[in-house]
Image 1: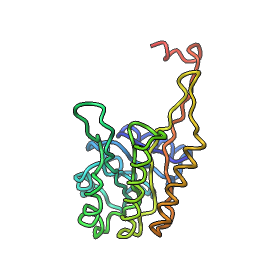
Image 2: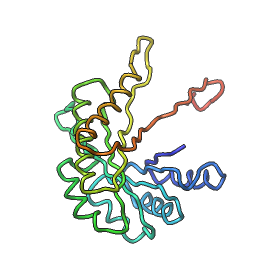
Image 3: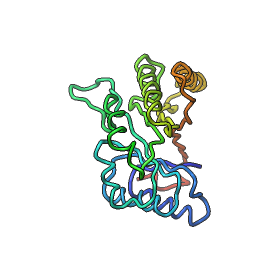
Length: 223
């Protein structure tokens, strides 16, 4: 399987999985989250040690500079789009990401002519989750249209990461049409790409696998 990381602590686990023969060096490793120095160093170590599909997702305009001294091999990268979240508080803002209008100028200025980096992925995530609402479809449409526009100046861009956010069953009357939502997301992405005469992107989606153990089988749940 492919993996996503969110902190420096995840990287040694992946290295151990590889040493145990359970994880190949060409598997995708999507590096999300805010990048503190140790996290940056661990990501660079993976790339420098031959993990060919490590993709750190840039969460701000200053992150790329942090890889300068440590990255010895060419690295694929992604950019996270700062979604304009629905207001739920008097003060609200996107926690991570680069604003829509800044992404293409940032690519042209900082990435396009730097031989050490290759932009492969545009990352999109809505904190409120994947819902059949005008807000979600509007944000998805904006992101895919941005992907198409960016693809025009960045031919190597080929992947769209829509994050995650499918709800999980938390009550007996829970009702959610996963099949409809999945098919509609794919259909909208394809339609927008066809309209812009852009090849369909590879689609990445985060899946949380939750194992529910009874307390008598795992005493840690007692704490």
